[in-house]
Image (tube, rainbow, N blue to C red; front, side, top):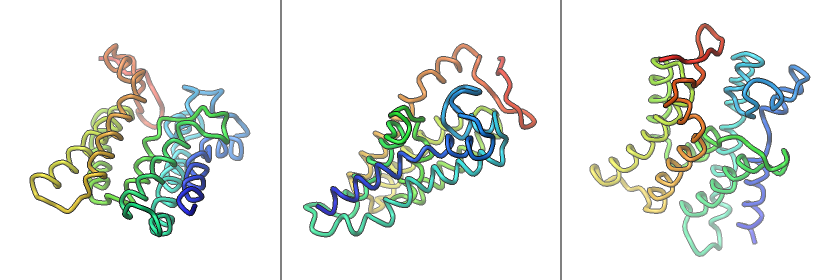
Length: 214
């Protein structure tokens, strides 16, 4: 019963449309009607600027981190599995909430930041490495999607290396979840990958988005 309730709370937390709310409160616009139409921090940066994009970044991370970190121990009480598995259930609920938000007509974003927040509560070292990779790759390419794909790859690689090469105590369920999440990031970035191959993916230069050309 407790796990059911906390799972619902995690889903609702993930469903909070941060970009839409910030767009309406700050610019009086529906972010989905501007820029790329995506309800994510990247589009907020294009339409409203980097300052408000950072707000969305922090909110999207928080809505994945908070339920997993704070409700995880409560969810594990009386459950047939452990804390790691309970937190994974909440993480999945929060990510699904972002992908299919009940508060935004079930049409959400790509879930990268919400997934990062959820995994930050479970695998802080690996997420820290992934964030570092994102920063480096984005600084070099100025392409957000490339950074996200590289970060997802780094997360999976870090978990696998630490678990099997260094024999770090990481639950098998977390290893599987990291792999699935990495694949999910690539799946939700299908259109970006196509544009990268075509050489038309957007870049950020001097605070503005531009069309990337090879």
